[in-house]
Length: 339
Image 1 (cartoon, one colour):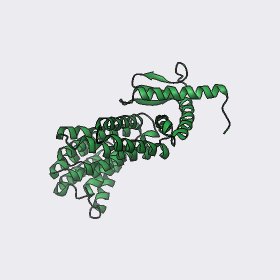
Image 2 (cartoon, rainbow, N blue to C red):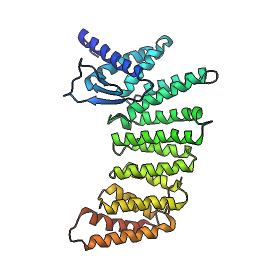
Image 3 (tube, helix red, strand yellow):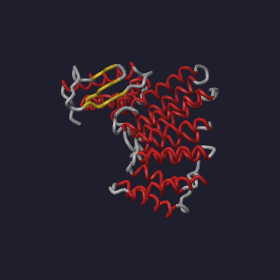
Image 4 (cartoon, rainbow, N blue to C red):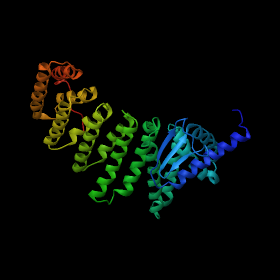
């Protein structure tokens, strides 16, 4: 690598220190980070800060990453420089969310804290877990196209979640547990808005479900996700998660009520989105709704007849008969997703 000149080296150091100091000042808060377009130049040329909102020019982030990487590899095997290496990983993961070595270093640091503090000073360990969650939320829910769908960071969050749950949920009330899980779903939904069809975010949501034992939380999740999907009808990842969530609702009338709302929504607004109709055809072909499917078949058939009588053809007038044909063809072959 060609060595940087004095001016570039100074800018590299300034970029890293400014970004690192911002992370340190807000380590207990979730911030929103955005990569600034070239046309927007911050005063001073480094960062644009407004409370919990941070704008970072791509050039600044790249320079900060070079300095962070140097500090990280310099300190990762030196206990005297471990804290410097740890701080550097934040900048590294912001720039390169798939940097496994940096993510694993943070895991190792939290593991060491658990061994040292969990027994006799759990507050220190708990605070570190919460700060790590704030850091992950800041990256995963910010308008960062690549970072918000990072498999490395979502797996890191899942690993962290188990540690947090063991600390916070052991003696928690039902309301506290519901608040805990609600925050996780909120993060998934926000990340899904930042990066549409965010497979890794919704896959994370799927991995949450076996950990949740409260029927009330399952009901709340289903309603929340249904509303989210109706606001984003083209997002197949959200609809797919809702499909996997419906079998967890009991009694079956709750499932039927949600599907009835979705079908009415699609019909009343004459929506054409393929992802929405894939959800409808799949749920009506499955046994998830049991005997309630007859009602939906009739509603869909009546809608198809109305579309056929209309003088003006549209995309939805093709979508609905195809949906009915698909249901009739594959109804017996579709298995119900397991809880």
